[in-house]
Amino acid sequence: MQTFQQSFAHAWHLVVTGDATLLEIVLLSLRVSVTATLIACALGLPLGALLATQNFRGKWLVNLLVNTLMGMPPVVLGLIVYMMLSNAGPLGWLQWLYTPGAMILAQTVLIMPIVAALSRQVIDDRWSECREQFQSLCIPWHRCVFTLLRDCQTSLFTVGAAGFARAISEVGAVIVVGGNINHLTRVMTTAIALETSKGDLALALALGSILMTIALIVNAVVLGTRQRLQS
Amino acid sequence: MSDATAIEQSRIIDHPMHNRAQSLLPLKVSSLSYSIRQRALLHNIDLELTISGITAILGHNGAGKSLLLRLLHGLIAPTSGTVLWHDRAVAELEVRKKQAMVFQKPFVLRRSVAANIDYVLALRHAASRDTRDKLLRDANLLDKAKQSATSLSGGEQQRLAIARALATDPSVIFLDEPTASMDPAATAAIEQQLQSVNRQGIKIILVTHDIAQARRLADDIVFLHQGAIAEHTPAEEFFARAHSTAAQHYLDGQL
Image (cartoon, rainbow over all chains, first blue to last red):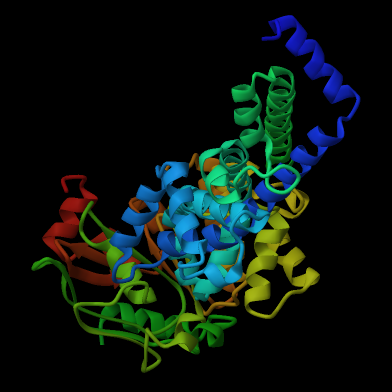
């Protein structure tokens, strides 16, 4: 096994020389997680707004489901998506298993409840302040929702970032539905798990440091954007 | 005809723009009751307001003042009874659109002062820079138009809320304790704004705990006691010689 120092030196070399394999893995990771986050936000934010602003039959059940799914282990969710996408499953016709599409689907399902639950809370707090005012102004519901989403944009931006962080850092779901196939479905987290088991700590470390850097950049962007929007 | 109605009718001749409020008046409230879980919070309210002016609703804590205001505006539906504005039910959208409400805690959108007004003008398909600037000028907020509304002081936010209510071009404005916990300067600025609004012929129905404020602003007083109207009297008469024992106790600070 390489020494700690050797591993770090090799990892640094891979990063600064722009190793093709490394780059490919990083880019696929970003493509999958960014797409999943965008889809999860497109679905989760309106769902959060609906749960915050409307009373309907079965709302309690939907809230319970959303809250429960927030804590679902990724590997269990990966298994469910795997079964859905397998040939015998209801979505087998898509032929998505072991493709980035399957990984996007799994991550979307994984983070959508997080986005919905957190945005529900953010919007609910604001809604309790403005509900009567909007009612007094005779604003139709859909317009209330658009106004609330815009009004809460700084907090919702953080919600989106939390969803992205969850997506890009998870390994269980993507390894089950993607299969960690080289040049096809290998992303940073699955590659780190594989390279660590093979004893190639340099690539694992390089990927790990890039993952941390991405987390740092995302948080910096979120903080910067929050400050800009608040000012 | 009640004393308050008579005094309102005599004032109509002097009012410069009485027609604006007249599109919704008279307000006729009949046998209005509101209960929650068998507990009557308001019962058998009968009230008639005929012309524009400032009506203050007074009463002790829990008397049902804010509840009555919300029922008159149609924010909540009564358990029984009717609220008719110019013989039309308060639930009708056209009636509601001619009314605006300002709440105790001012709500402002998290955008600029000007954008808060623009938002409501756009809702009413009346977006215009001139209208917006006039509303802000009247509220003494024109120099803060580009500032974030959330950075305004409490008094300024309330003035913005009133300006935004005016952006709906209402005939009636409801205000629920608009100067609660404000300093005298902020209170005076809002009262000045309300008097100016009333001079435009807009009916004002105001809930307040501030007896001095009611004395300064109101033309007539609706006094609520234990969920019922104890009296509806012209303001001068109310403060000189309240008819009901409850009102007398209230003015004496015993209620």
